Image: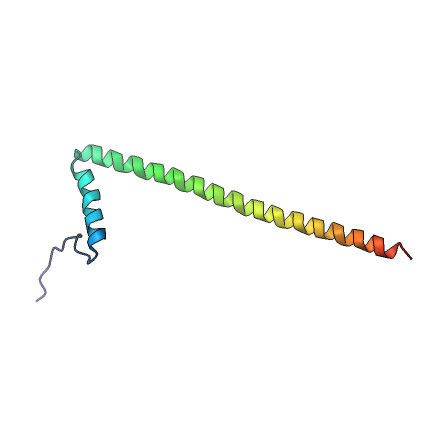
Length: 91
């Protein structure tokens, strides 16, 4: 029969991660439960706002790169047209 073991989350084999996880857990454990939950919610909301801002910035960069591609193509077409009129009209 297999016995159920209640293994600690602090025994992952990586002592640095285990120590960091313990310190982070302890920082919430010292707070009253309702305060800890409110602080956690506040941090999640702040991270959600940061994620939204990063997504907007990524979208903005993608639009600027696409705009640069359009301009480059317009310039290429303009220089090709100019070269055609210059070489064709000199005869």
